[in-house]
Length: 216
Ligand code: PRP
Image (cartoon, protein in one colour):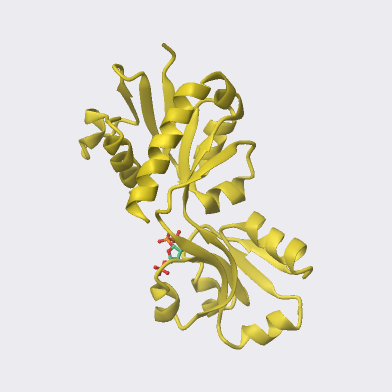
């Protein structure tokens, strides 16, 4: 039997997703050893294997079929724009993609002034400003600690993830506009969906059931 391969975005998401797989009776003992540097884990009995990848790479593995299934945040799915099926909202890791900045920037935003936007998500930011707001902006790609940009004068606003809002608060910034809601999603390779339909559908349904039970 061909193994079903699942790519998990490394980190908290992977741990939570593995808990769900375990509840479905799909587990990987090897994966529980946190000190291990191993990247791929196989359950031969069930014909399934899991690997951990950088979140941004999960949609790539799934599009090319190196993984049949992926578990990754909606932010990454939108930013990567890969060809795949998004089949399930896991309702975990919920947060929002927002335009944030100092309160004074709100007016500049509303008046469609040519503002500078710093973000780790240039594609999402471009889509939001160009296609939804018909607003021309200058987008500056950064790789982390985005909240710094308006504070040190690199940009007027940022497009970033807001979860609890404490990073913003502690840095004197506000949510100015909401771009979209985010959470972890299950994605599937388009060919695998046909070729392995039975096994993949079973996994989707099992997961769906758990998500429903957890969040009525
Ligand atoms: C994310 C995001 C915000 C923060 C939001 O950053 O970019 O900075 O979390 O969370 P909060 O609303 O609960 O404060 P992350 O920790 O991933 O680090 P990075 O920005 O440096 O990549």
